[in-house]
Amino acid sequence: MRIAILAHEQFPNHAKTAIGILRYSDHNVVAVLDRTKTGERVCDYVSDVQDAPIIEEMSQVSSEVDALSIGIAPIGGGFDSTWRSDIQDALVNGCDIINGLHYFLEDDKRISRLADEHNCEIWDVRKPPDDLTVSDGTADNVDATVVLTVGTDCSSGKMTTSFELLQAARDQGIDAAVIPTGQTGVMITDRGIVVDGVISDFAAGAVERMIKQVAAENDLIIVEGQGSIAHPAYSGVTTSILHGAMPDGLILCHAANREAIRGYNHISLPPIDEYIRTYEQLSGLVSPAKVVAGAINTHHIEEAKARTAVADYAAAIDAPATDPVRFDATKILNAVLK
Image 1 (cartoon, rainbow, N blue to C red):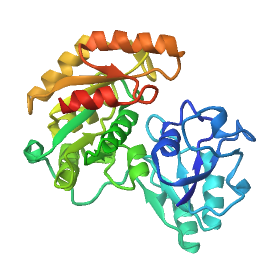
Image 2: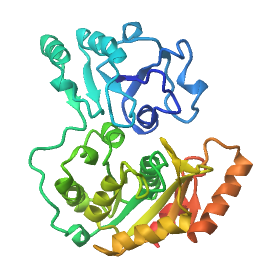
Image 3: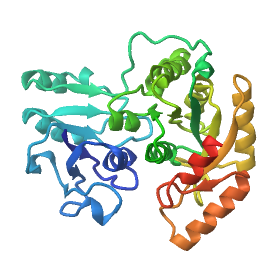
Image 4: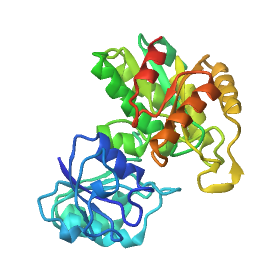
């Protein structure tokens, strides 16, 4: 599928959905929309993903496109009215819309009417299935190793680590699958359930369902975590995934040099050992799991300092650690399989 990605004023540092699609999706990205970087290219900012031109608006797309993906995941998942013209242009030209916001475009009368008029589909990724229910507490019965990425904060590398670990496992001939629990993971794989869009009573059950659906065909299941246990907004989702997954091991993800909760600068990150203790205690209330490895995001610092940060982080968590993008995920995979 050929897609364009909307990332106005946020690419690349605050467009993690766009970056995730560019790095891991099989879709062919023909353009990224960011009105502040018109005329530049993706590779001017990020070197290890698909390259594409950056353009001002949807009307400038020069080749046929099947869908427009919303590549921004703002806090709260709200809709910016300045995006409306690009979405409307896409629909008029026969493009489907893939939307990861909490704002459902299918419920927007003007946009929905345009989609109907031009025979286009709107996929509101965060809209959950209608038949979800509570967890049975039986995810630990599956005949597969289940690991969960957890974080010290949101945007700390849980999704990235999940997909890097998936690739490392498949490179070694291991049957493995990612359980996508956020809008970016679902948009990459074209499957999954966005857990923060699920009624809280059913969130753990949604994770359990997805694990059981893939367990028979896979020896390793990597559950993508969300948020952080220390995040004032997202800790509920974090806990639901932890208890629904009933993992065999945890991978603690952290962003190097981050000192405060993203978007909440008045709240400092707790010490690393406090995260480990809390995650392991919370997990143990339902199904015991230990932090077996760590992933640290070092993309914003030079390589020599990155290697030092990795070594310091491994010492802090007393487990193998790496930056899975910069240095590959082999250390994490070996720790998971140990």
